[in-house]
Image (cartoon, rainbow, N blue to C red; front, side, top):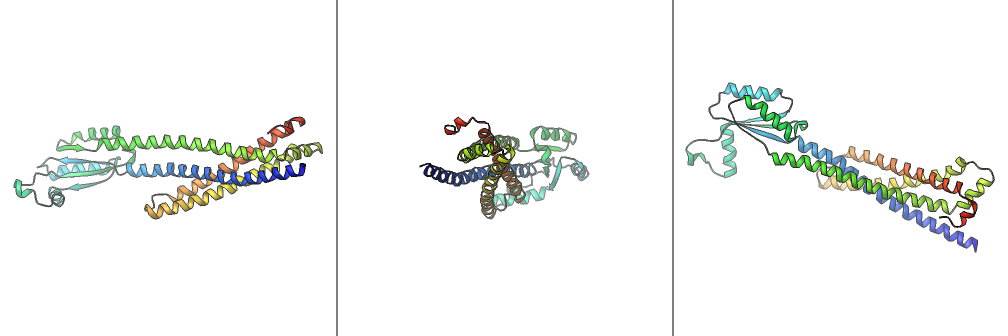
Length: 291
């Protein structure tokens, strides 16, 4: 009867191990996906910030020397990533392409001003910095208008912050779930061998000697789960790269895989140590009831 119960327990443990490996793998995969999104969110936000700019419209009749002076100022300014001068004639051609006809035939003259499109450095892509840039350009009296999409700049910065907070919260929640799953798996494994632990103690085995195989087994469980989830993550990334023009960074993937392996092995090892320590210190009569 005892052997039958023990055999049944071992089957439950093996079945639990299989389910736990799959469960932990899925949790690690979700952690990997969220971490990858956080990493690539930074890349995407940097890309968006590095493509924010403003347009300077120049008054008609401004001398070429004044325009060149403004160009030199923009060229050496720390906030300038790149700039492009658009003359009245170039603006006319652009407008003609957009409208499908030459508007100057109606007006009789070209009313469009020359302009300079400036792409700013990502470090200055916030409303306060752009307001400072605008103020610094007030010394050029021939500037007719300084234009930028204030709402777009604010929206980008706000969404990046919201995405970061949401990602951190979800990652923390998944970490808690992963720790709980791993801990329950290790506890069940150790519970099925609680009498073996006590027997080892009675014949003089040290705590470290008893803990070692359990900790090693926990680490192997974590590594195996991390390997499964990492393989699935790479497969997902390859599909995303194929369909979304390499929007996901391969460098970010390897960093996430390292995190997944580190988390999986460390947590399983620690959980195994705590679980074994519980049965090393428990009273003998409680071994029959404790779980």
